[in-house]
Length: 74
Image (cartoon, rainbow, N blue to C red; front, side, top):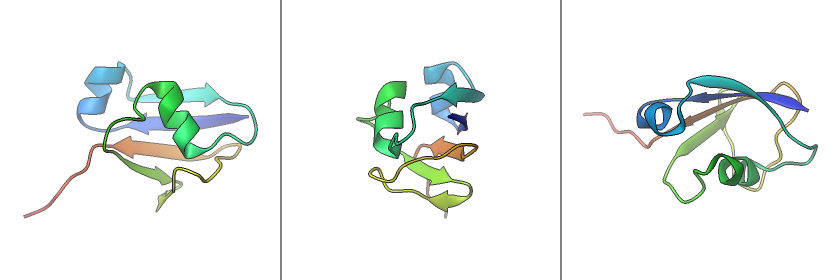
């Protein structure tokens, strides 16, 4: 299956891309995706199609995953 991963902020510089289509095996969890990208040990905010996703939830064909560093307003 293919998903679209978009990175925000400092992750773009660290990972070297802003947006990339990635092929994954069916049943891949959000946590496994982060581990595969090498960002599993970092504090990040992860959404699927505009809504938060837990690390144990699976991603599906065509999902749009956004990964960003934590942020705060003021």
